Length: 540
Ligand SMILES: [Zn+2]
Image (cartoon, rainbow, N blue to C red; front, side, top):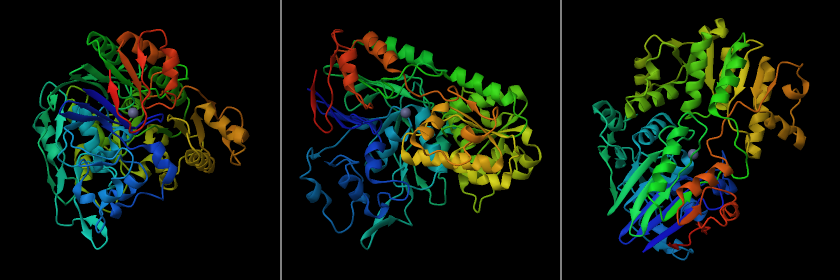
């Protein structure tokens, strides 16, 4: 019998952890970090304690109480974890055959970190390599051990990284027709630091437990995203992951819809992040709007977009080529681009592109991954002094968290900050946006970005003094919309997609408005089942 249990991602965006059970086969669609739930209790400086392992995430409901699926080395010393959590609603003992992972965003992949290191992860080569690049070049963080784990051992009452142990790789099963080449194997098996990595060689995956798996590349704001399907005893069960139609890979999403409808699925699990919103700006419009702006800038251009949004990076690369500027990337971006090229050798290798430069940020130490980046770019490194001297020669790809480089860079007045990211969702992000405006005002820089950011501040009376929207002379601020494109399809597009696929049952996840689909699909013959967190649904 087929049964689905959504543990997270129910009536909230992100944190998908959907257990599928069919006979003896059990697997998850995604195992994400549930941001909404996490923000209820934690923030930047108040975090789950690495020394307490599984205790904090289990206690605060970030992980479901499922004994048998988590890392043994994260059981906190001196306590019987499961004696405590066995009375939680939904507690079960469980073993699973794998996680089918749709893409590398942390709200879908992040909490793989807590799973036993022998549970196979089925995903696209690109998603696997994006995760490896992120983990290698990021800060060590026990909530982000998606590709390999650093074993912990009890040190008194706390868990600490075992100094002598090698990192231990997770088994990844690639959803691809062919194995990647030797260079990809080498990247996968290499350790980023001095610890060493006990890696698990990459393998291909066609079955999870006894069931056939299919994947369908889709368009989303990160490369490698795919929808997934499993042929169960009741028929095909499909899962959209996150998707959209308005990026460069929109055709892939349409091909998924066609292929999915041909399978006559019994169940479709689907995202609904943007229901209630009209179709917004497309990636092509973002390119055109940003191009117009860069044409008129005589100083430095700073482009701010989400770090793994490679399609946006490619748009700014195109603009750099067309306007005779060089595209300046951070070391971790170059490392990610190289990983992408290894996963998909047919894609152009931007790290070797003559227009691309490495922003040479001095660092106190040089870990292995950084040494590699510097060897790839060779002479194509640019210092802060080079940039200061010749500001009109560059487009610098930065995020908010790189603003503290400005005192060294000294952007000239009239330089422009292109804000090509999503709007502030919460108070913390709103405060960061005010800080951003303060930085720009300090250096006399112009801001370009979507206007709703500003309206939100004005409406709440939180506009900082010197806000360029309020006080700058006309002409220095370009108001959008049009500098950011969402990673998600609109409600209308999703409804059309579901009607075309025509599953027997549609189950909305990754949405704050699951009821929307009840109304929108009424009279179509498609049943809409709204999941309840942790409660199994027998299907169909
Ligand atoms: Zn996503």
